[in-house]
Image (cartoon, rainbow, N blue to C red; front, side, top):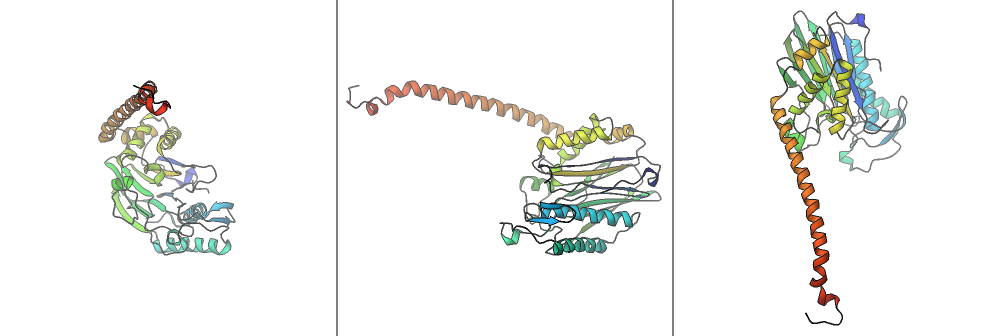
Length: 345
């Protein structure tokens, strides 16, 4: 998938971009490689997380071969269809959501008609979806002295906006329960809406108008943020890795390492920063202040880990002393049980 345009297609302003996809199991990751588009006056990032639990049925695909789940196939073909759609319609001040939805439905319908599943999932039928995937796309359109930022999503992958004034989630998870992002980290609710081939779905949309200033748009699947202790930790991770990095490639590597240390899932992330003169200026503006509350939480986490290690050591020592003590104590303690001659005490 060729998501990057030639340099001459991008305006003279400097653009910072990072994108990656990490598979938990090589060649079987159900996140698609992220979408990242840079065009004159318009930019887009997007991620697609195939829902393996609901879409575990094995299928065949003309573009992806055999032996993959419908979740794996869905994330990739929906990503490809949205890449083509956005490449064709950008730059554009407004995007037709109904056309976006129609293209996705047609893409999945054609795939479903061409290839019957090779195996049937053992999950209960009400939980099964055909070709299920999340979607989280952010577009930015530059006009005069302002930016128009649009967030499009289905499911629980996230869209973010990052300016010097703050870090913002600009998508709301489609969940069976009305959990806020913090609650959902610790009480993971079922997804109530996702892109799929067998049921109707909706594409949510939010539009934000900004003054023209340095800005970053981000899309991320739940493997990037869902294993962190709080939503604040995601912003803090981005900033801490940025402080250590000397360029985009190093920032990318540090982010991948940090995510892999905590996640138990496939991950994909794409971001574009617009309006920065250099990576150094970008770093100075966006990594200037860390999230103070997370620093306090990290100190407490470190102390908790240290205390847990001490308790583990004490527990092992307790068990060893108890075992050795019992070995010497039980000889007398079980004297009459073990003595067949009922000897006197």
